[in-house]
Amino acid sequence: MTKQQRTIVIITEGAAPALLDRWCAAGLLPGFARLRSEGSHGALLAEGTPYEPPGLLSVLTGQRAADHGFFSYWTCHDPEYAPQVLGSGDRRHPLLWQQESFAGLRFASIGLFGTHPVEPMDGAVISYPMHATLHACHPRDLQRRLAKQGIRPVHDVSIFWTGQPREQLLPRLLEADRQRGKAALALLPESNVVIVNLTSIDRTSHIYWQELEHGPEHEQESAVFAAYRTCDQVIQDALGLADDHTDVLAFSEIGFGPLRDYCSINDDLERAGLLTKTPDGGVDWSRTTAFEAVQGTHGTNINVRDRYKHGTVREQDYERVRAEVGAALMEILNPRTGRPFFDAVHTREEVYPGAATAGAPDLIMEPADWRYLPLGDPRWATHVHRTWQSGWHRRESFWAGLGPGFAAGHADTAAASPVDIPATLSRLHGRAAPEGWTGRALGTPG
Image 1 (tube, rainbow, N blue to C red):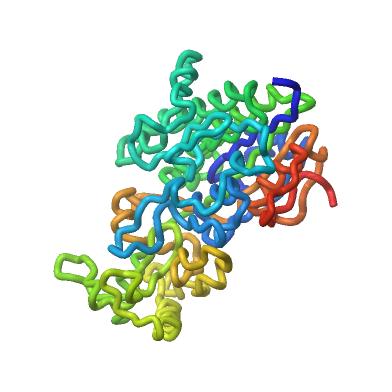
Image 2: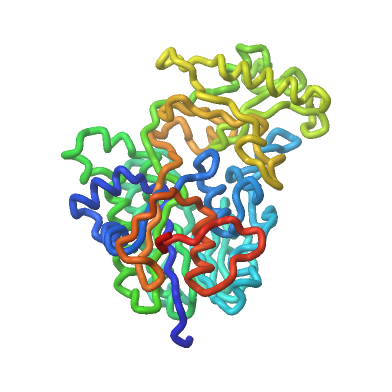
């Protein structure tokens, strides 16, 4: 490949600004610290409810969640009340490497949700399947080629937390990111843009956040710190390969913070007479007006006729009923604090105005205390052991870039959005942003 501009994009999923600030200042994360001090950096805020799929699809498509329609890993509305896993066939917009504006650039993508099932491309992809599969890469021999170099990336679905001891799970989570990082850098010589998603910070923060609450003197013993160090090493390795035609851009689409408890909003809807349960604890859909949407969306759905198999609310009554349900949600008290559970309850049009608004939950709930969150659809919440968690996402995270395409020592005072990442790639590679993109290019003053 001729000497063209290259970009290494490293997603450190779940990185919390407060932890980055503290550990960088202490000299514990030299990779992150170098990116932020020598290059350009700033805050990044999630759009709407902070969750991986909305942000990642915004990065991959250049569209906001309101337009690309991925609000969770699962559909928000299913006629049978059983949220379905979303995949590449559900996308409304092309991926970066499918854009005409990026024609001629070779991409490599590793571990990003929204790329499975894999599609042919001029480059390489290791997708993010939500189930066990042997067909998660392109070209089909990619995993075999990497294995010959001693690199064996694995999928998150194969490292599922089922309550196993820390000493069994943590090494696998960290090694998965090391292997993804190695794969990304191995593909760099044949790529113009390499995007790798590192997930150990997110996974350990969900499971082991409570270890950070033992006191600052114990933080370096925590699983979360080990994940930050692992991601930091990937950044250091990338910076070690950077030259006068290579930029390194790191960011997270979500931040993180402590969690005390999830609360089942379905229970509160039942007490308000808006949901009826069956004797075995399920939902009697034929006698239910509203119910909690799939996890991660902080949503509540109205049981509308024609949309759901056993819908009870007529279309002409939708707005009235939605307003009544919203008012009932605002009356919910947090039993742990005695204070209101929500600061606000918004309509989907208020939070996600766009072409894909109808795919969002009917109501979006804004927690009053982010340590106490809605449980979400009980089927998936139970499957992923959601109530075992001690940490969950926050809107605030970071971005930082270093290389010839980023102003040295530049601190951006305006918060970035996930759609700004693809706009930045357009600038770095001298390409016009595709029509319909609204992001701004990061890394230049002014």
